[in-house]
Length: 303
Ligand SMILES: [Zn+2]
Image (cartoon, rainbow, N blue to C red; front, side, top):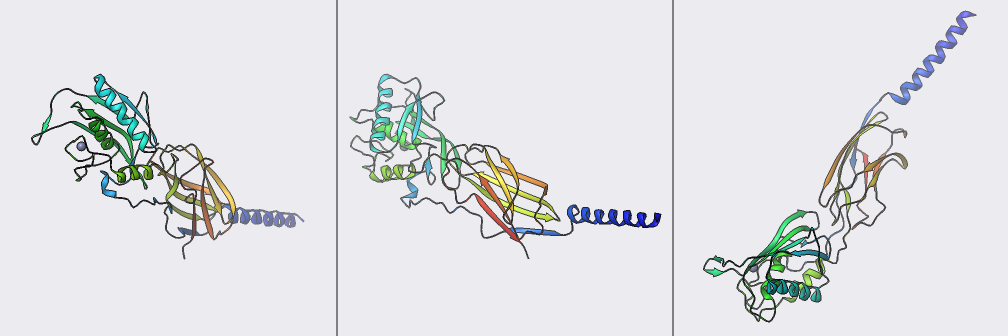
C-alpha cells in the first residue's frame, strides 16, 4: 500500500518535472533571418539638377524657417528682410523671426578680399544631419559685408540661397554667379528645386535598420536597431513582437532625433508559441510618418 502511494507520487513528480522541462528548458536553437532586404521603399521623385546644392537634397526640417538678425545697419537689415520676402513670394517657404533661430544673420563693415575680389558676403549651412532622404540643415548663417547698390537686395538673396544649401552657378545671369551684378535673377530651376524639396511634410520616419533573432527553446534573443530618417524628432512609440500571428511582447520606443538610431538587445524574452515559423517585429507609432510601410519586418527560420 505504502509503495503504491510512493510510486504514484513519484510518477506525478516525474510528469510535472517533464512538463516543466518541456515548457521552460531550451531544447533547440533556431536562427531567424529577415525575409527580403530591409529598406525603405519611400524615395524622392526629384531628379532635378542635383549639383545645384552643396550636397543632394539639402533642406531645413520645415518649410517655415526661423531667423534672427544681429547687429546690422538699417539698410542691411532691410535688405535681408526683403530677401526673405522675395523668396517666400516665389516659393512655398516662409521665414519667421524667432529666438533660437535656424538662420543667423550677422553683418560686418570691414572690407574683405579673396583672390583679388571684394567679398560681398558669406552664407551657408553650418549644421547638417544626414538621413536616408535628406541632408537636413539644422543651422545656417548669413554674413552681409557689402551694402547692396541694386534695386533688388541681390547680395542678401545670394547669401540666403547659400544658407539654403545652394552652391554657385556658372551662369552669369544667375543670382548665384560668384560675382554680383544687379541684373542677375533667381533661376527658375532654383525655385523648382526648393518647392520640390519642401513638398515633403515635416514628419518623422521610423524604420528598422537591422534585426536579428535567435530562439533558444522558448527564449528569444534579438538585436534590433531602429532609426529616424524623418524631418523631426519622433514621439514615443512601441515595438510589438509576434511569433507567427500571436502577439508575444511589447517594448517602449523612446523618441529619436532626426537621423538618430537606437540599438536594443533583448534577452530571454519568453515566447509562448512553440516552434514558430516566423517572427514579426512591428513599430507601433500612432502619429504621422513619411512612410508607414517600413514599420514592420518579418524574420523566417533560416534553414
Ligand atoms: Zn557666393
